[in-house]
Length: 367
Ligand code: DGT
Ligand code: CA
Ligand code: CA
Image (cartoon, rainbow, N blue to C red; front, top):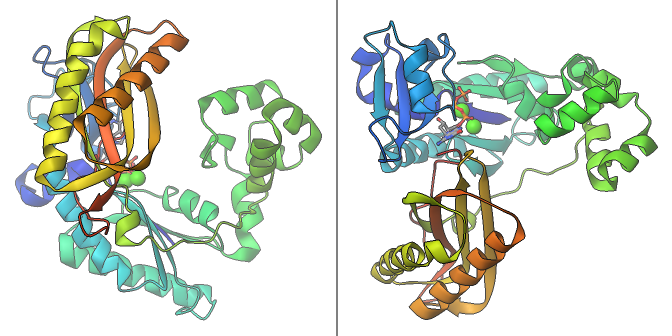
């Protein structure tokens, strides 16, 4: 089963203020540069009717909603969404043989055992899961039930919001064949466009396309994966995520006063951000095993670099020098114009040597 919460951040806002349900609700990442600068993180389905979606600039969303005076633009409240997510996930876990946390609003569960390998039992279980999530958090979610993770993920997206789609093994090939190739997880706009040039539009087209030509085009790994996926084949197991394996990190990201074209221009900001991250790590008494940087470019593309340390560390100097060398490296490669700069540390250990659970960054991209 793949479970994905509907319009998650915006629905969380509706949960705590049910009176806004009928209004267009947009959760925004305000960058603070000007009143309207920043991007829409997500929007409820009322707002989506006007063409609003994740990742578009707030300015553009405001233009789309120009005649609509009850639209609500709310700032993102990550810690509240995380709380809602944890409640919902704990309800889901009770019905799983294996639980794999994927992100703040989605997970996979393996229910083969408790459903005795039967799809009618799995479907009933999916209804129970939806109901429990609703009872515990008031959230609706969309669920896909299928013989493998890839199909389950496609299925959960098939009928949204509040959907339930079951793909039985005997229908898998038929189900997947009709889909456009970009419904296959891992096929983004670039691959989709290249495939279109080769005359491949649907997964059915892709499944019957020559594998060797695909390998020439995309390399062996990608080609094999997409060719199998197009036939509904995927063998990835659902992997239990231990508390400690969750993507924990401390991250700070700031909007630069002025777009930067070189690493040097960002050194002062970088040091300040590192101080901030370091303080947070000290407060939480953790040593970190990995340092990363995030650059959000002026076209909103994200560039990330990270490096694992030889041993867990808790020194500011090591954090700062590693971040700086990553920044030099990232800026040295290509001409880039950077709008936002961030630093993150992860792979934590506390003084007793155990992983601890806290803050992880939720907004994924775009801001
Ligand atoms: P859905 O699942 O289509 O009903 O709608 P969402 O909003 O749940 O979409 P999903 O599952 O892709 O993303 C989960 C959350 O991640 C979403 O509520 C907000 C955040 N998010 C998604 N895309 C973006 C983005 O482009 N930028 C930012 N800042 N946040 C995003
Ligand atoms: Ca979602
Ligand atoms: Ca999601």
